[in-house]
Length: 204
Image (cartoon, rainbow, N blue to C red; front, side, top):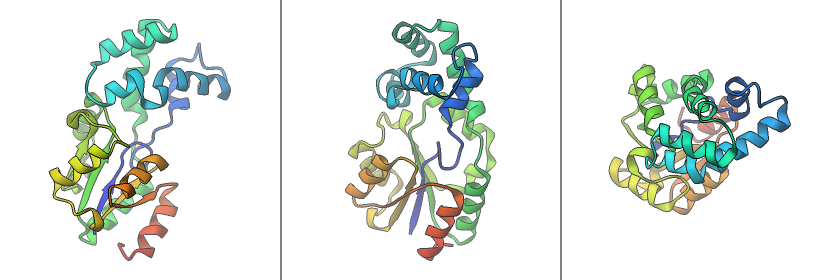
């Protein structure tokens, strides 16, 4: 059984409200304002940020677009973009499960919506990514989850048989899309929940 991990929210922390509270303290005053700015800036990972995920816009141009669209100063938008790598810290419990799966000789791969600069940062920073046999970042593929094409691309590029592939993601529509592509898939909620799921499937 191949095991394919999403990154943000599964293997690495991804908490946009906290990120914006740090990057835009003069704008984010409470949970409600944080959520409003999350929606304005990230647009549900469609729009401008979706193009960034897809590798079609560079950070400087993205900052300009966000500023025009939201009323932020360009410098504020740049601070948000530059703050993302510091937010993408490893989730220790999931990293421990990654090591357990590797020790059990499960073939490990990844499939992540990730802009190119952040993908490079993660590769340069975290040695445990060497446990993966390969993977697909959206910016390098020019495709994004939950599009059916990215699952087909991933299976083709990595030589995965969908029926023998388990995909782990924290977003339900990405899980649903993987299942529609013939993959096995489960939604990540916590390292403890994931550990129970993996043990139940006899993978660790």
